[in-house]
Image (tube, rainbow, N blue to C red; front, side, top):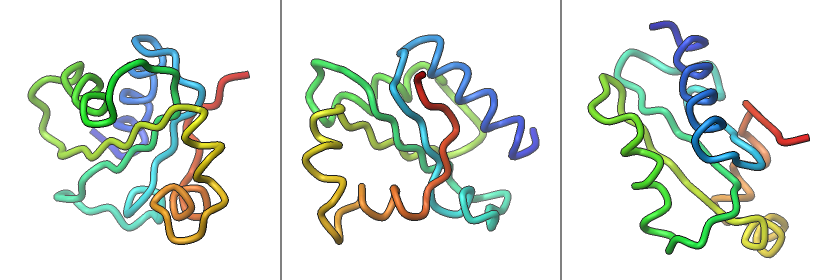
Length: 105
């Protein structure tokens, strides 16, 4: 599967199942430096009552066994508002270097 096809598949699946506000890719895939062993780093902004450790697990389980490694970071809109302007946070790095794959209109 090409990088573009992988990103499209993952984005479509997450949008259909979770209705996020935003999905971004960051890391090597966002920089265009991804190799065959690169993990897929995703940021997802969505409303969820789940505890932070459970959020990424819930999304990851949708994909089951997969041939690509994936790291998922999930923040609620309130967490994004609180953290997005604080330099040095993971969210500030994602906001600066990440690429938007999906944004709710």
